[in-house]
Length: 140
Image (cartoon, rainbow, N blue to C red; front, side):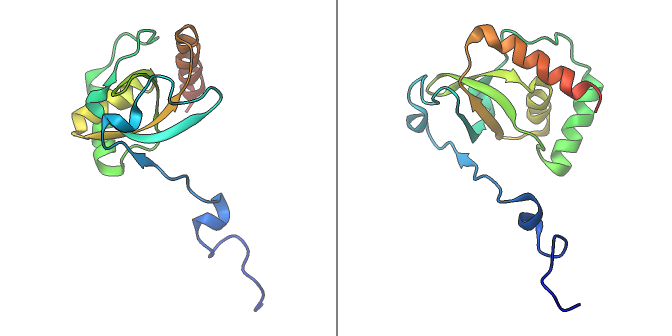
């Protein structure tokens, strides 16, 4: 049994592959221009919470404060498990597409930055993306 190890015991990279690098946004100059993210590409970055604004097309209009507090407690303990989806609207302004509960709970948890997937998307498609995420998460 002294053969080459397979799967278990070789680390997570052996099972899941390499983890993408998350870039930190240090200043607005790194994000100059609305069209920094080319179409058909997504960029993962840590973005200051105050640079993010609620989405105009948010399908959910009421948020249970108790559930947000529970999520904030989980975020304090485990961090953000899934990045929120945003689109860049100015050099240091981003609009939420999906993940408003995580964004609100992160503020309650006192986070300064959030992992965000920056997506180049037309405003008319934002509602569809938000609805798709909610439908996909409904049965979790």
